[in-house]
Length: 334
Image (tube, rainbow, N blue to C red; front, side):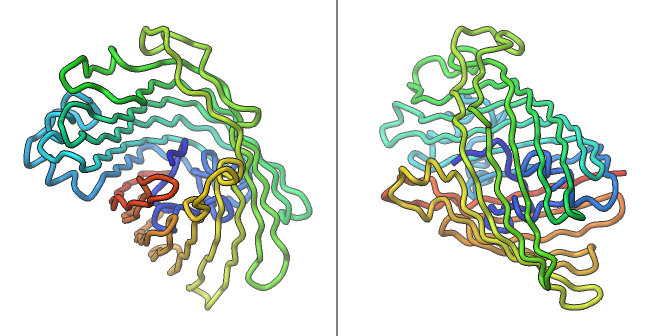
């Protein structure tokens, strides 16, 4: 399953985020999380890199010039047929204060597998450039938070089986377009010990199409796939263990509509835990679908470095299969 956004903190916590997000990524995960901000954040630079565990070995077997160019990836993965290739890079400069935020989100993603015969490469390529603007309304002293994010997205996409002897260029195979979308989120927090929390996000309200802005970044008559509206739900607890030690526990179920039509319901379940030492050092763990995840963060006033490992289900509805991945993010903020 491919989300519009998933970040290193969430990936270390089993892919769960909507009930616990409390920084600039609330703009992308759950706009109601903007109501949790205690200060303003301006993110200048925050490169985030994500790749399959086999990407290093694949590169050394046959180096590629670009990890997101199908023709380059095909030459490398032809030496590792039927192995899964995943690479993702994203950037999100932004400015947020309590209840409001704006940012520019850029992302390149490439998933590919060359079949046993070497004749075809199943390819998914995505290039997103988006302007996001979010607002949150705090009610009842913040116990109720209702947020909305507006998204203007320019998208280039390939989702097809490409013959390896044919044209493998992005320009020759991609669809392109732009569209407007919106996410609406809510967070309800009870004023009791451990702050029990319930959250929900309606993603792509009414559906998001890409029929506008054709030719903005590429010339083609094909348009990217329409994104249907769906809903994520979550619960969370926030135990305080001492003056400088607290933790977060959350369970999240994503894509309720899609999950209702699936046989394997576990593919949509996410479980996450975080241990916070003085807002400086964080230890994370969880289960993404049915696969373990873990992460670490070291944070200072103006910088963050985060790492995570997670498993992604790349199988079918009835036959799960793990692709182990690693994530690194470094941020500079003011």
